[in-house]
Amino acid sequence: MTSPLIAALEGIPRVELGAFPTPLQRLANWEAFLNYRGIYIKRDDLGGLGPGGNKLRSLEYLLGEAVRQKRDTVIASGPGQSNLCTLTAASCARLGLGCVLVHNCVRPASYGGNLLLNRLLGAESHFIGDVSVEERRAYENKLRDDPARWENPPYIIRNGGSSGLGALGYAAAVLEIYRQCAAGGPEPGTIFAPGGNGGVAAGLIYGNALLGRPFRLVIISVEDPRASLREHILAILAEAEKLTGTPFPGNLDDACEINDDYRGEGWARNTPESEAAVQDFPKREGIFIEHIYTGKVVAGMEDYIRRGKTEGPLCYLHTGGFASLFSQFDPAKPPPAAGSSF
Ligand SMILES: *Cc1c(COP(=O)(O)O)cnc(C)c1O
Image (cartoon, rainbow, N blue to C red; front, side, top):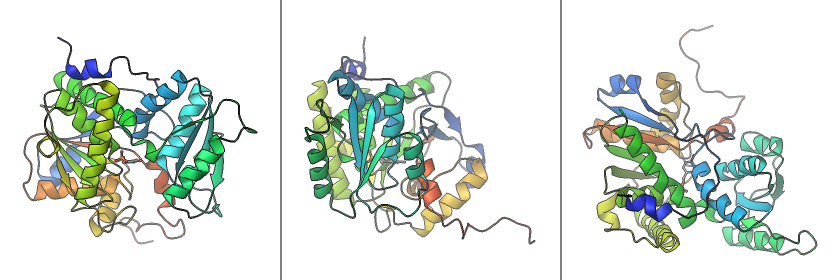
């Protein structure tokens, strides 16, 4: 019998961008450090294109739609260090599409992190100043509708790629993880994942529900209070249902746990714990995390383990963000050096 999840995704256009399945690895040093057996990491930071990250799975569906509509240029938008923007630029390079990036920040004095990569990837970047999301949206529409620029208007990716269509990438990812568990991996346990705009979360929740809920899902908000993240997730789920024609079975509050205890003062505002995680985790495992998304999820997962709020195998979903790490430190003031005292 075909799973309802496979049936729901069938026929939705998709382009191949990532190197999937990404590895599911055991974090032996972290297990020893926290005295907990069975901590795994799903390496979506190793996406296989550009700097990797969760947006690649969304882009497989979003750009699948752009290609179906025969668009030859794509517009994406976000802050200067947006991971979506860089992964859109990398994906457009792969697919032979033009890429225009609209950044709601002033033109930077220096091009570090993702801004450097965007240049290397050949994207056209617009810096429209410190404007609201509505003003950015109006700018994108004006750009798209400029008849002097194109006959074939560009495809616009909205809301950081966190839409019903983009979320299908993470519905499919649940099946990928489930198959890795079945093929000699751990028993399906708890997955810890970030909630920003809610696309990753909605996709995981939808896919897990259609698969009969093999996993417990803990969504760590990195930005919004629980109630507003929950609203975003519900809106994305409704879009996904409409696209696939397959209703989300059950209700959201049984399907996952949404926790806003680790978000600090919101997006890109570190907490002492996330700060410590960013410095500690690479020293133990050789894997980088960053301040905006992944550091908060690692700090949250660590707290769950220490408080005994979880049992059985755990899986940390690493959503990437490697390149933005380079913009999160002042190179003149690096983090403390280890050990010796030269
Ligand atoms: C965008 C992003 C997220 C959050 O994804 P949402 O779908 O907006 O919740 C998490 N981690 C990284 C590294 C991201 O770039």
